Structures are given as C-alpha cells and as structure tokens.
Length: 264
Ligand code: URA
Image 1 (spheres, protein in one colour):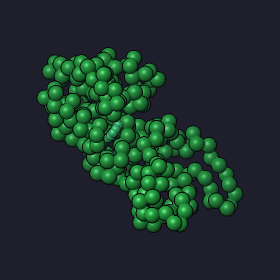
Image 2 (image 1 turned 60 degrees about the vertical axis):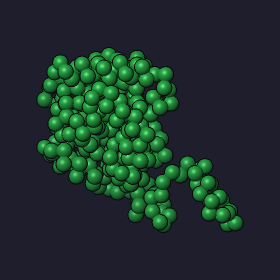
Image 3 (image 1 turned 135 degrees about the vertical axis):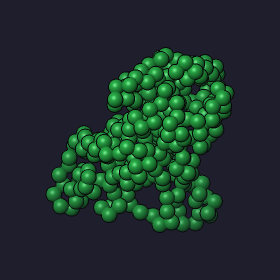
Image 4 (image 1 turned 60 degrees about the horizontal axis):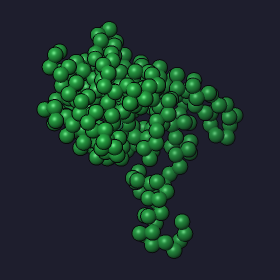
C-alpha cells in the first residue's frame, strides 16, 4: 500500500488481501490488552499481561475451561431465548471479537427437522441469521423440493460466529461452541437431524469420516435425556454450488429425510 493510491486502488488492495467486510471506522489492534479476549482473565485466562511475567497457559487448558463455562451456561437455560442471550455475551471464544453478529439458530423452536451447517459466512455475519447467503438460497430451494420451508425447520451452525475470512474453524473453537449446539438440539428435540457437510458431521458425530462416506446413511444422535434421533449427513449447499454434478445424491438424501419425517 502506498500514499498515492486512489480510493479504487486501495479497495482493490484490501480485497486482494482478503478483507471482505468492515468492522468499524477506526483501525484497532485485536491483540492489544484492552481489545483482546486473550487478555481477559475472566472467565478464560489465557496469557498474563503483556509486559509482566508472561506465563503461557497451554491452549488445551484454555479450551477446557471455556468448554466448562459453555456447559455451565447450557445447564442453566431452559429456553432457546435464554440460551441465545447467554451465547451473545459469552467470553470464551475469541471468534466473538472478530464477528459482527452472533448467528444463533433460527426457525421453529418445535421443528421436526433440525439442520446444522458449519459456521456463518459474510452475509450471515451481517444479518445474524444462518444460511441467508448463496448457500442459504440453495438450501431454501432444497427444502422447497420436499415441500418444507425454513420456518418449518430449525437451522443452526456448529459455530455461532464467523471465523475471519471464512477460515476453517479450529478444533478448540469447535469444542468450545459444541455445548451450545447440543443444547439447541436438546431444546428443539427434533424428530430428524440433517447435517450439512463433513465438518459439521465430524463435529457433532465426533468421527473423522469424509462426507462422501458418511452421506446417505442413517446414523443416530442421543439427546441428553437419552432419546435417540435419526441423523443424516449430506453435502453442504456451498459444495453443491461448486459441484453441481453431486446434486443428484443430495436429492436422494432429501427424499430419505422426507420419508423419515413422514414415518415419525
Ligand atoms: N454456511 C454455513 O455452514 N452456515 C451458514 O449459516 C452459512 C453458510
């Protein structure tokens, strides 16, 4: 970047550097003590103050305490509204600092079908609603093809915050946010779960299978009260937008979902 750049060149430079949204009018340093979650001692202590004794606490310990505080929150709440309010103020995941909005689950709190994606993208981060971008439009069409609309369903993500630049979420971020996803599933108590994409499937089912191996087979998810819910994993709509040739398989998964919903 140099000082003789035109505004257009400057914007192009930012786009090339991977900037796709503006978080504020003034620049700020995320790693400065006053700005960063990494320097907050409560509830998750990560690193002591920058210029005093630098005692690094291993990431795994940080993640464990953040998971514990996420679980404690989940035990306290009995409604989706309560959970949403507490997730919005949760301090244990640094993604909240870089995200514009918390993207909590959306739709019918008594839905028969619950859908799970990976994490919000740029559009979702702006609106606070899951699956409203290009993938969301395709998802709406997919649901319409089996005579459902998103208001009939509950749509959520493994992560309620967008990872910067849509990077792949870390294992720690997934582990910390998983209790929130699981509590949403408990509270909705759906008849059927559809997982969109391998990353969300691996997070919820805790296995490392590829989506092409997982998809199309009925699996089971246990709610905290022991109720077993049938789960199907299928391709993520973003993948289908890039690989239209796989839409046939996604369509057969949707028909399985429809059939299961009719059986139950
Ligand atoms: N992709 C996801 O996995 N979730 C969204 O909400 C949007 C895109």
